[in-house]
Length: 100
Length: 241
Image 1 (cartoon, each protein chain N blue to C red):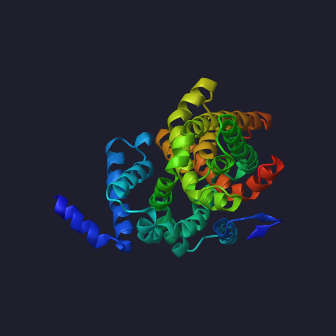
Image 2: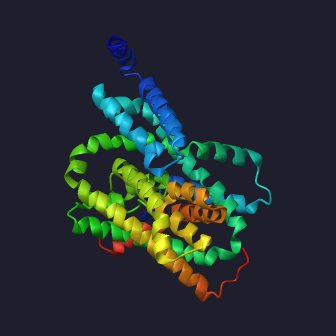
């Protein structure tokens, strides 16, 4: 799928379409709920084969693991701190309309 | 015992059952262990399974393509599971509709800051371009990160590893960072956790507080949905892609 020249994965388009269709329902059909919940319950299992593919990248990882690990840890801390700061800033700016 | 293993290897060699059974079995055991140790993120079952399976394959001299003839039967379901992410997103969205604008802004900015900081830190530390690109989608949930990285030219296997490590790091350090910043608002903490550490962070957030969990789930879903649309143009803007 291409969207103004940028490649969009088909599965993400599928997610968007399902979200839009769910919004059209007042009460979403049960079979969708069941199959979605079934797939998501086992979601983390589905990552394993892709992750095992790292065994083909030993040389790359051995060569750059310090850079990889440091950038993962630091960027995660930066992202946590920045997003929390921004969210707090926006909520303050909006005068906290506390209707959840 | 050794002979038994040997004959099992011969039996399974070149058989798709090998990858399938091995993955299911190791994951099942890893999950049991994870729950036994109070679900500490460091023993995340995905991380543990990957390490154990790689170890076993090397030990038994089975190559990745042989493993994947069975492994792909599991891998295939990543696509449908990505589509299914729309379900919890829809549920969360209904619950906190009034917050959609702040959430949208925070998620977009957070995803881009996570990607940009990872890319430039890695570059500064001497990592090559493929590694930098593989880091870019590391803060969103694995199925989406893998789909996105295939499109931008990184290595999906590397990204799978990066995503999980990111989730574990975020889940472990999140509370420390929030404490250090003096943030108590569960909504704010949840959004930051969902954006920065996807499903692993969201699972941790649910353990801490219900509100935090719900907001983390929402942020994770919005990030997953949007990253495919915002990351490629952003990388283009930075001249990386």
